[in-house]
Every structure is written in structure tokens, then in C-alpha cells.
Image 1 (cartoon, rainbow, N blue to C red):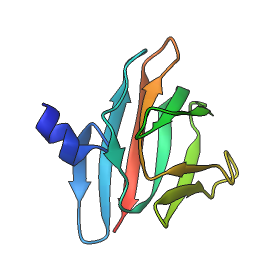
Image 2: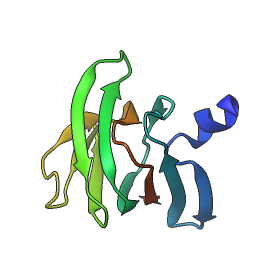
Image 3: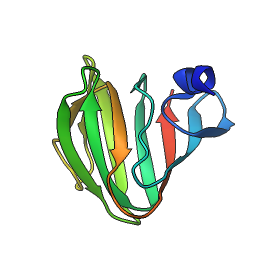
Length: 117
């Protein structure tokens, strides 16, 4: 499992890919955290079931918690090793492209994430 997630990092399960996009299903149980992973594309996500997500950099430093409401759509731009939130929700938030996230809520989290190639 570990090896797969190292590659797959940005999502739990790849559900579609073509020459323009990669679509991921992403789930995170309460208290669960993702492996450390690196985003290599601009992307957006749609929160099917929201939860607060605490983000950590590769040294384990707490970068803050992103409240992700159910139904929220986030759009992110990758630039110089950082991700910047472009959507109204969270606009201007910047985090390193290499990070991990933890569901600090009491309910499961689920999103659909779309990477733009």
C-alpha cells in the first residue's frame, strides 16, 4: 500500500485519466492523514463531504487548518514549489506543493480532485 500511495499521493484512487486531466477520488477518515505527497499540476477539487483539514509541511510544521465545507470547490495554481488558492473560498492561501493533510473533524472527508496536465 505504501508504495502505491507514494506514487498516487494526491488522491486515494485514480478514476480517470486522458491527455488533459487526471481525476481522483479522495477519502480521509476522521483522524487519518495522507502520506507526504507532492502536487505537480494545477488542480481543483469538489468536496462531496466536507471536514476541517490540517496541513503540514514536509518537516511536520503545522501550516494551519483549512475549513472545507461540503459542496465547496477549490481551485489551486502551482508555482515555484507552492500552491496558491485561486477560488473565492480560501483565496490567497499558499502552502508548499509538498505536504500532507489530516482530517481533524469527526466525520469522514471525501472529495473529487481534478489535475490539469
